[in-house]
Length: 395
Ligand SMILES: Cc1cc2nc3c(=O)[nH]c(=O)nc-3n(C[C@H](O)[C@H](O)[C@H](O)COP(=O)(O)OP(=O)(O)OC[C@H]3O[C@@H](n4cnc5c(N)ncnc54)[C@H](O)[C@@H]3O)c2cc1C
Image 1 (cartoon, rainbow, N blue to C red):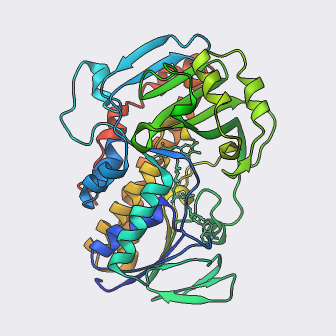
Image 2: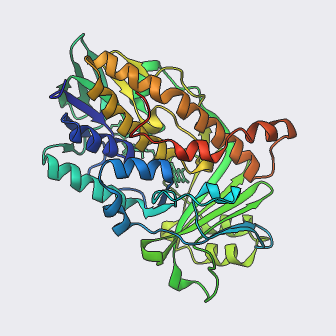
């Protein structure tokens, strides 16, 4: 099994993590990415303990500390008044809520500009194999025999390998080619994002390194990245009007200003100082968790397998876990089919739990959870989510 050629379609955080984990396990990897250049959207990304542990298992913890930001304070605030309900000096350490401190060095958040983590991981892959990444290749179709998979791209090029993993994001065309058209529902959330230079804000605006503002039907999350010099800003509103699902629909700032005009001063200063060219919006859509995502020598990973709402901050974390577990499963198996089945068995229930948990948390954050669901939501203990270790979980 060692010299298997694994074709990865999509070079987002999930595809890149899988590539590093597979290379380290001795497999040949090729990544086929539709974009013409390696880049990521200009937005932040938070990794919690489970994803941090995955990165440590790949030997990346120190490198990530060089490019990431480790916050020392966080606040849960009221969106309208800015009053802090709860403050923590160990953001990300979910044991603090129970009066304990987690001694694990990965327990606290690591926060990044996406382009920084993406660039670091791509460099590691190319240092291992300069031919591993192929840009400008948009997936078109696949064919598999009992031994191999052949993928054809829209530019006419094709590649044959021993197995293929679709890592092509929440609107995965690989998933559609395997299972047919998606059934997708607009979940009634619209989101905006922007990057605010901290120097552009009036002095004293920013107190804690990270803050979550909750209000009825609206919320805001903001945190420091890039050495604390930039604020990653995301605002969410429950709205009935449909907005495109993509991450990069340019947004009119005046719409955001108007919608949040009655909120606390900190949020208003942040919105006012978002450079217009970094302001984007998108709609959030839901897909039911899948009970299977493998067919023969083809499987899915990351958002392609389990798209989820951002309200637990775990979408990338799940993609990262997938990559580490996939490599371990293939390494442990005596056939491709067995390896992919082990992978799916190890990941399906875990990712379905987090997908549903993110939906519950969205309702809770926006003050719209029903009483009956409130009790169910308490079943999603953050310790269960954070303590998962993809490097040691049984496969
Ligand atoms: C507002 C917001 C905030 C978030 N914050 C966090 C957070 O703090 N922490 C966290 O863990 N998660 C977070 N997430 C979720 C996280 O961003 C995603 O879950 C993660 O990016 C998924 O990674 P992926 O590699 O599976 O997919 P993607 O990142 O979507 O990558 C897919 C890749 O496939 C490529 N591709 C697509 N189609 C094709 C094709 N046909 N052919 C070839 N290539 C193709 C794309 O160009 C892209 O490079 C957030 C999400 C949102 C919306």
